[in-house]
Amino acid sequence: MLPSKEMLAAVYASLAEALVGSDCVEAYKNGLYKLCLPSDAQSRKVIEKIDVQQHVLASTFRNQLVDATSAASACRIPIPYIHSITPLVQLERFT
Image (cartoon, rainbow, N blue to C red; front, side):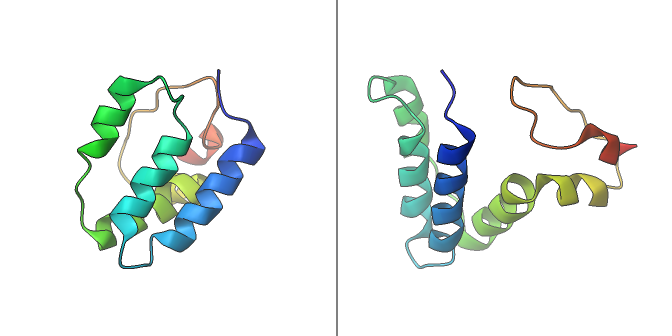
């Protein structure tokens, strides 16, 4: 079961705002928890171990998740893309 596009957009929007605050790592973890089923203990263990600096987290989130198409078009090195059930970017931007 995948979250709806609307749900993902709402989570991403709230995360983008929270990632500029002083408690950004906890905000990021809480956003990820919202995407997991309550019974998904394995994912929750992985999320709990996340420890990253704010500037890395905020930049990565903004440039790769929120605006993936722009990130793909700005890429100047070959990168692999594993196609998932929900495409994140327009693949023609890589050519």
